[in-house]
Length: 274
Image (cartoon, rainbow, N blue to C red; front, side, top):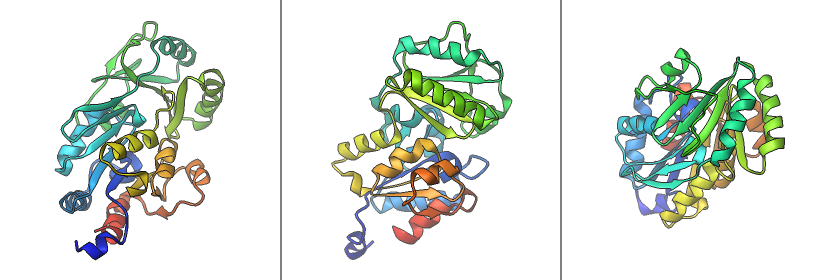
């Protein structure tokens, strides 16, 4: 890249959500996306995987992409450096875990999940979720929802096929715990809780600072409510066409690009940055 085109945009850092954004619908990285990520790296950009997924899971995507990259995981509760060092970590207050699990487990149609340091725990079998993680081989272990683990918890989340069912919980949990937790949807069927002030946006700022850069040096891509802070924080935040309506309403001034099916993130980067 010549100096003239480098100065045409201020970007040094590219951050992207995974599911529904950078990954194909089958939750793998497309070949064109891999080539684009390698070009970005060769041209001196810092890439960040920014996801609700667990860091153990994300390592496989970074390996598959073949680039050193930062990993913002559990919606910003954890950040790892390209050398896999834990750079930033915020846990949910231990005494909050069991009371929240008690609220959610009252309805047996909810599935409860916990991300702990190196583990993914759930209160019931869910084969559909296992398929989500085929590429990484990262899988869950069962936990007793009468005796939930409370230490080193990055996030607590629960799933249900009906978005409106979860939206009611979102309202109630925010009323009760909004001053002690960050609560956000990653998909319409998955409501997530992290420590207060945890978001991909906060984590992005932490990475930019450590690189000696500003948020205006960042461009970001996402499709979920858990991406909103990051898409607002970055100098340019691109929204996927398939994003939930709530995301588009929250970001009325952000440019909308194509779908993950067409590797729209890679095409945007190819057309505008490379």
